Image 1: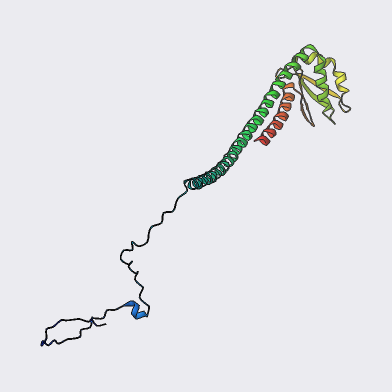
Image 2 (image 1 turned 45 degrees about the vertical axis):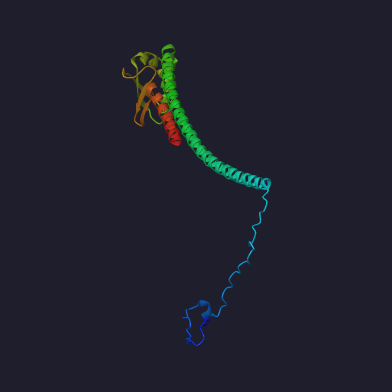
Length: 240
């Protein structure tokens, strides 16, 4: 687009005019064919332009909105905190139950072991008391010795001759009941009575061709102790 220049000259003066076009510059809008954006029209002289509008704000409404937002956030935070607390309490309760269960099981096991040990001690004490009672009864009642020997002879079957070892203090009493002792077994024909001071009173040892019988008081108590100890050991193994 060319510019128009107006000149004032005096009469009789020649003026030669040259046309000079402004250099063209690249315009993205012209290259794409887009229309240039319209420039905002300047307000006419004396027009102050757009007048800012003041919108009144309701302070009460803003306060209520803020209060509702605060209450909502507070309720949500409290719900999350309560859920987290309940979760942690459940975990702590489960761990406490496990610890208490293990503790109670340990206590129960110790009680069972202690009870089994107490029973064994009770057995030992009972056997000691029984031994003292038997010895006292033997000293007071001579028939105890005779009954012991008679029961021992009945264990021998199919023999005619036996060797009977007894305490020297019981020899006279046993010899006085020799006929009765021979009648204790059908096949028995002879009893050789021998004193043995290694035996305690009330007990005896029978030797025969078919086997021996140890009827000493200590031996019988030991057998009882072995039976009780075996049962006690099995109970302790079950406990452990």
